[in-house]
Length: 229
Image 1 (cartoon, helix red, strand yellow):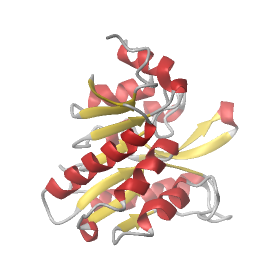
Image 2 (cartoon, helix red, strand yellow; image 1 turned 90 degrees about the vertical axis):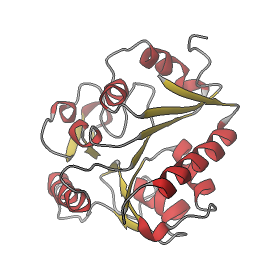
Image 3 (cartoon, one colour; image 1 turned 180 degrees about the vertical axis):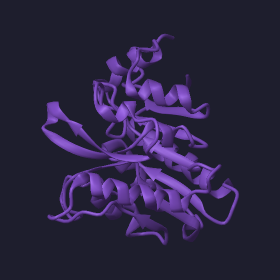
C-alpha cells in the first residue's frame, strides 16, 4: 500500500491539492483527464486546489459518480465540485445528464459515450480522485451491487438497495485504465475500514487499488490510527 499520512484533515487537503496540481502540470498531451470524487475530504481539497496556479484550460474534469438528483440539488456531487472548484477555474466540466423524463440508465449510457470521446482507445484518465465509505465502497461501487460485476461498460446506473436509491458510477473496467488513482481519506470513522483494506479484504476500494498499479492513499492520522506500524 502506497500510503502518505498527514497530521489532520486540513493538512491532508493542502497536501493532496499540491500533489494533484503536480500531476496535472506534468501530464503529457494537449488535454488532461481528471476524475472527481464527492464527499467532504475531496471538497476540502477542491477549495485548496482552485488557488493553485495551473493551466486549467487543458483539463477535462468529470465525475467518478453522481447521485440521481437535479444538477442544482444539494446532494449532487457535480453541484459540490462546481461550487468549490469548477466555477472558479477555466476547465471543461462534463456532468451526467439529468431530467425528470430521463431514466438513470439513459444518462449513464450518454455519459459513457462522453467519457469514450474524451479518451483515446489505449489511454485512460490521467488522474482519478476517489474516497471510501465506512463499508469500503468507492465511487458508487457498493459491496454486493451489480456494477461491480460489469466487465464491459465504463459508466452505469447502479441500484443500491440498502440506500433505496440508484447511483451513476464509473466501473472497474474504466478505473483500471487510469494512469493514477488518489484515495483521499480522513477521520476516525474511516480507521476500521482502512485496516480492512490494508489487510486485503475483498472490498470495492481494495479491488480498485489492486487493478491500478499507481494507487496512492492520502489519509490523515485519525484514519490511519488502526493501521499496522
